[in-house]
Length: 230
Image 1 (tube, rainbow, N blue to C red):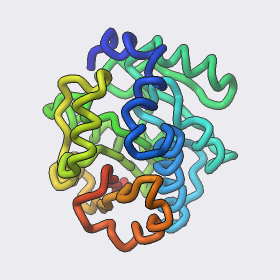
Image 2 (cartoon, rainbow, N blue to C red):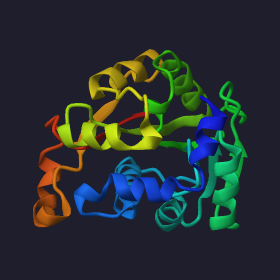
Image 3 (cartoon, rainbow, N blue to C red):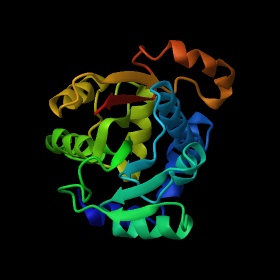
């Protein structure tokens, strides 16, 4: 995790993401919000009412307004290796979350501090050799019965591969297959992960989006999530 690399894009991250997702017909807000709505739904289905949420790899805080919307009474902590990105996030959302720096090693919080650890399209920026260790760190800081939830781009989707290939922010990354990430959850001590594919239809076909609930098994969605209880 190279802080300088992420600092370099802090001021232009939103513009880069807007350009990269234009093919979907949606703005970046659609992608930031749907993940948090999924997270809130699964928490509700699990009988969870999170009081403390960790946004790991939060960058400039794009998920903050949606985390605040879905979890209005929870404390939110944004953690990132890029101090410049965290500074941008604090200016954008003053008082909405705590912003903390991560040195890439041990997550700087005590065991069982959070109810939920949320990771939105971050791991593909981190060396594969670090994934199991970091997932174990996320499990450590989540309370027993809490949840670790990770979203990633689906390398089986050709549009996703094109978008990632053409995005300067994603230069040199290696996308992670859903079955690979599921195995890494297990290796990190979370033996029963669940996985679903997401984002099958562009805005032009938005009327078909209610079908996504029945298509979560199909490895053609643009993104996917894996989650497990600690």
